[in-house]
Length: 218
Ligand code: E4P
Image (cartoon, rainbow, N blue to C red):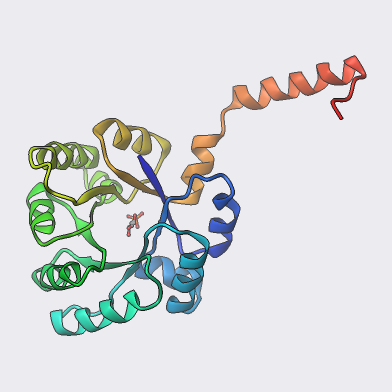
């Protein structure tokens, strides 16, 4: 499973890129607003740092303006993935951009039916929002499972399932078990995946015992 970082914070990307864990980035208008930075500059910097897909979301709601915005964003770098909402105008935009060879991430997906439409519209990625479904008492991960099963019936579909709205490590594990191609993960959750108290305790003991030997490796 590929890991995308769900962030508009360039420092988070710089810190984690050296691990080789970062296959791409997703941003959204809320993350850009939280960063307080210029949208297009953030996207350009992300695209320089990460060779994989960097999702940049259109702001318009109508097809004509979405298309203009999408083409404009795609000019920033070859690895820009234009993010469009799962609306009729979004799907029309997806179709045109996909036919022009531009990768499209269809976002705000909350049902298998929506995911089927996005795939037929040529989406490179479909983003079902797990955490936001959990928030309203639904089972977000069940949606990931359903979409993965459905897409698997049609191997010619090139749309990748991108588990979004990930809130905790278990979501990442379950998305991998379901066969999601990608999980977009907030940096905080990457660190949660990394940490284990037994690793910390074990390491502290090894350090203490190594000191007792009085030896040096170099
Ligand atoms: C990413 O593409 C989505 O915009 C993001 O994962 C949404 O996450 P949230 O529901 O935590 O805002």
